[in-house]
Length: 386
Image 1 (cartoon, one colour):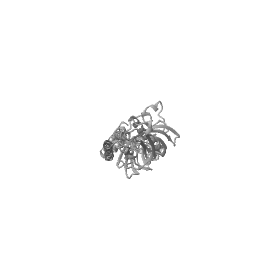
Image 2 (cartoon, rainbow, N blue to C red; image 1 turned 120 degrees about the vertical axis):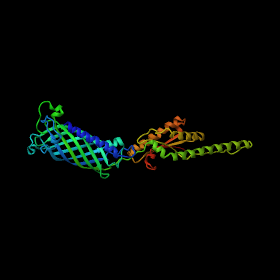
Image 3 (cartoon, rainbow, N blue to C red; image 1 turned 90 degrees about the horizontal axis):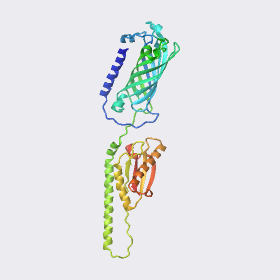
Image 4 (cartoon, one colour; image 1 turned 30 degrees about the horizontal axis):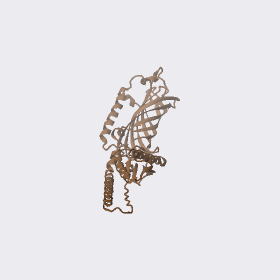
């Protein structure tokens, strides 16, 4: 048995190295998909080799392929990926097996099934980043459940570990190569080894499976990338610079008009005059950005632009309008409405710190929108002079 386990370990290591060599591309985070996305079904032809609890001696690798141990069967599974690296599947395996009571395969024949819940770890995505075009995914897994020998009317609990390799055929379809080891209570094959053998691997019924088949993805099969806030800021930097330049021009114009008014008052004799009113309103809003599903300001750099706008508003005695938004492509309408309110209030809190009185601030919550591209630009709040 040690040789068998060593053989499985070598397969795992070689697959891991080859999978790492195969992948190239940039890592990125992904957006959370809906509950109905990333489900899959699998169907496989299975070659099984059985080892009974009554066989206390070591079994050579060459004997695992003897016909009195081996049989063909099938497996089917239903599963879901909750992230690109972590998934669950429910797997049924059966139905033709062996109970090792002799070297006559006809005497050993039995019918059985196993049903297990298994946790899948896609190490290709976990270690090298999600890549929907990756040809080879390397997926270790472990699980547990129940088995039944129908020929002898026996139930037994068991566990399994395995290595699932999937090879991309299309976005929805992949080829499976799965090798796994299962260990069950000694009554699984209908013949107990006796004693306290449940606590010992040597006293349990075991099976090694090699499976070939297909995976088909149900619904959405990919994950949408989500750029981080630094990438978003870099993409929109030219827009921010343009707004800063426009704000600077407006402030300079306001200062020039103030100087003209002062000069006019000095040159005019003290006589009744109609009052002169100069009003200058900054029309361009300033944006403050937020991360996905968050109402915490993602970058303090955005507040520098807000502070400049506040200075103009104070000088003019004008009110400020804060408008909160969310992106309509993620979350429910109600959740997006709440997010837009929370984002607006987060900016209001910063305005209060800058010395703006609450009665000089109006807030608007728009909810989910898709007015800007790319989508993360819509996760923001704007500040403008009324």
